[in-house]
Length: 62
Image (cartoon, rainbow, N blue to C red; front, side, top):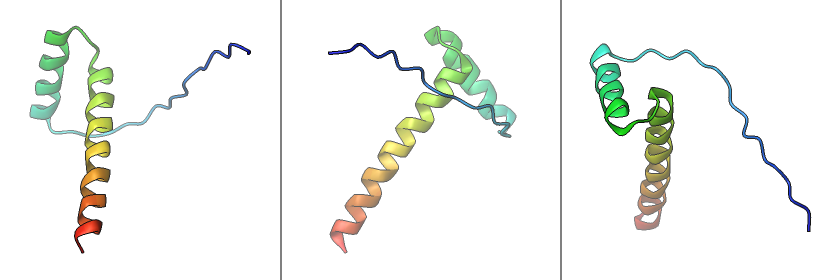
């Protein structure tokens, strides 16, 4: 068996958010000891996972 090191890829993208949302995310990230970017990524991943689950549940009930 071969050990393969995986290097995740990432890209830069500029997005606009309301100042109040930026402040809230920055405060939570600071309290949790993680970067603003890490928290945004985790929030997006969580939302997308739950969006898929909700979409699948809605399709099953129709």
